[in-house]
Length: 141
Image 1 (tube, one colour):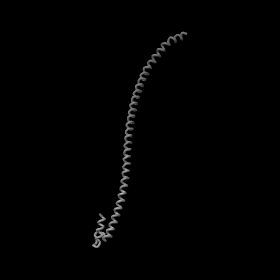
Image 2 (cartoon, rainbow, N blue to C red):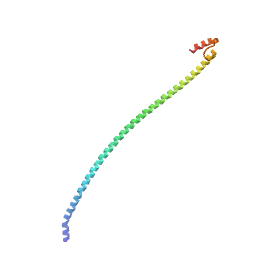
Image 3 (cartoon, rainbow, N blue to C red):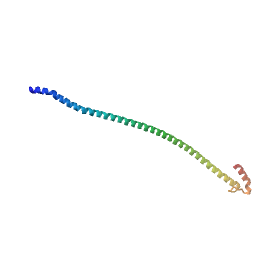
Image 4 (cartoon, helix red, strand yellow):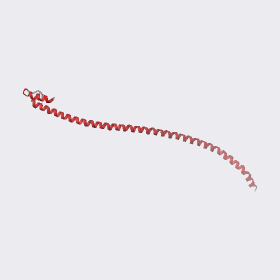
């Protein structure tokens, strides 16, 4: 029984010793906890700054892409307008070429008429055909 009484009397001293050792362990744990808290706060702060920067960058890039798209639409409309103008010009040029062909044909016909009336291809009538040449000059005007 003596041993039990000795054991019981030493229990509070042992508990005080354990409590002191646990208290000493608690100090480094609290310091580590404070350091981890500070590291986590810095990480959160830097992450928020990084994500904010990315959001700004994406917003700027989206705005630039929108402006590029508007510019491309303007270029596309300009190309369509140019294509329309070229088509119109092509139609006018075809009409001009047809009229020019008709004019050449008419000129050729008038030269043939002049030759038949004057008897000469150089436009100088022979004396006997001056009358016809005068008629031709009248209608030529």
